[in-house]
Length: 216
Image 1 (cartoon, rainbow, N blue to C red):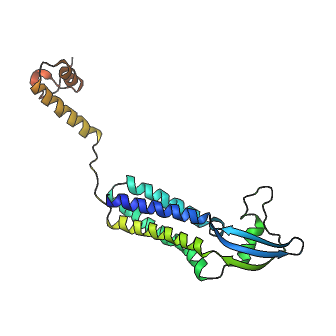
Image 2: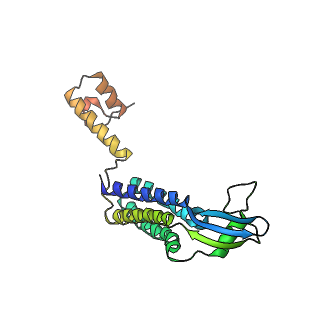
Image 3: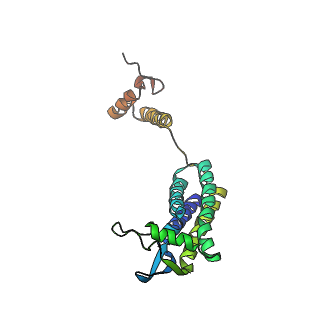
C-alpha cells in the first residue's frame, strides 16, 4: 500500500473513532430538585466539547484530500491533520486529568443544549442542585485513540507524501493519439478506419502521416 494512502486511511479512521466517542456519554450528572426529587442525566461528548464534532469532520475531509491531492498538497494536509488531532485531544485529556465544571454542566442541562427532545428540551430545572458528577474515562480514552491515529497518519503523510502520478492534459492526449495514427498510417495506409482517423486529427494521409491535412 502506498504511504499516502495508508496515511489517509489512518486519518479517516481517527476521524471515525473521534466521532464515535463524541456520541458516547462523557459525564453523568446527579442533581436534586425539591419539586421532582433526584435525577440523573448524561452529557455526551459532542455536547460537552462542541468543537470535537467539527474537528472530526475536518479530519474526515483531510483524509479525502490526502487521497486526491498532489504531493505538496498532501504534505500540507498532513501537517494540518496533525495539528487538528492535537486540538481534538485537549477536551478528552482534560476530562481525564481535571474535575469537570459543575456550573457548565448545569447550564448545558438546564438550557436544553444537551437534550434532543423538542417537546421537553430542558433536562434540569434552573433551581436544581448538582450533587455529584461522574466522568466516563472510557469515552475519553476512545477519543484519544482516535486522535492518536489521526496524529500518526498526519505526521506520516507530511513526512512521506508519496510521488505524483503522471497526469496527462488534453494536449498530451491529443499528441499521443496523433502519434498513434501516424504509426497506423505507416503500417496500414489503405485502411479506411485509419484514413478517417487521420483526417479527424488533421493529418494528411498522403504525406505518410507527417503533416496536417489540407482541408479546403
